[in-house]
Image 1 (cartoon, rainbow, N blue to C red):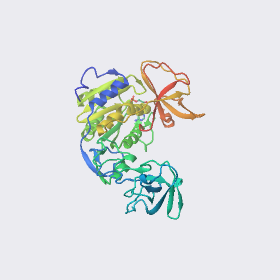
Image 2 (image 1 turned 45 degrees about the vertical axis):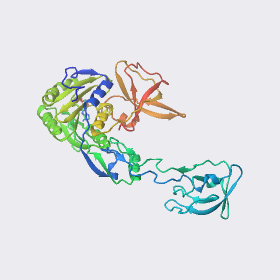
Image 3 (image 1 turned 180 degrees about the horizontal axis):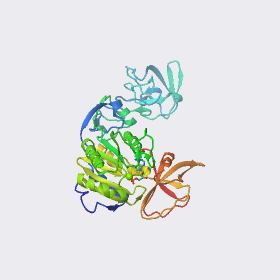
Image 4 (image 1 turned 90 degrees about the vertical axis):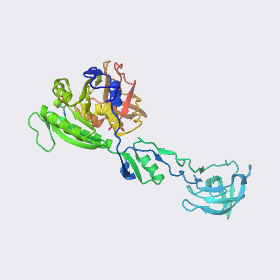
Length: 418
Ligand code: AMP
Ligand code: MG
């Protein structure tokens, strides 16, 4: 751990932390993996740049036309009335006009075509009138109009994309526009995960009395696949000391991060606390939030452990609010994504006690031309269906003591979280 935070410090263990403190402690603790590898552009989606991408030449490479029309020399145009120009050729995208545009001349030009020598201005075809080889241009044109300048998107040797950037569709296109076929990206983060609980059965086997199917591993599979991690599914681990210890040891050997679900609530934490204390430096936190109050965080060997609660909704909330950005930082993302909280009018009243931050499943919906957010009726932290019906989390601050219909609440859209 870094000096700013130590899971060994007594203050961290059993700490009652605000959501902001917990998030900051995690972010301050983790440092990015450094190993890089080369991948072709198409395999780079979701990957993180290990080095700046430098523009090898100007983009666009030449001055060119932004419109279909006529390339002219601005000084040819009269300040009032029409100017008659003789059309001396044409320029198409990918097929330039090789001559010079002189005074009194024009070249028919298409969008994207290289601006011919001598021309500095493009007149859109809609305002012109053509008779034979003569084009008539009305007054009121501006010098340089409808042209795109060489290097206006990117100048040669400029940083096109900085190291730490996570590559999305725009970045893949931008990289291709530079003619770059291969990139240096951080290696994928290796994340091992397992579920804990004697009551858990895996899909494909029938349920014995009292058992439930393990859903958390499937949710985590989805979350971590979206994250772009290399995932290592270690299955279900029963609530037995030797089994847990073996799973944690194995995970810490092979992964950069370990995510466990279950076993961190008051009744169960004592049991794994002893194992974790033996294996590494782990703090148990009681977060001032709902849902997802208990959580463990710390280090086993070289691996970071995120001990999430067992309830399926708590898993998703604590993943998004705490683990996600720590995992992104570990992966090398820099700066971390901005996650706006958007104010939206509450469609319904919401009850809340002050003192903790609450995350409610909501649906942002347009009603009569106005965007509103409804909180879903079933907010139990075991009710995963409402996570599927929701499109946002309504985030109520610690100080909030309830919401009246029409009042603005902060909303965090699922986009980018899940
Ligand atoms: P725990 O944190 O282990 O006390 O679990 C809290 C609740 O979440 C209990 O009702 C568990 O049965 C449930 N739970 C724990 N792990 C899972 C899982 N992997 N899939 C579905 N439910 C779970
Ligand atoms: Mg359990």
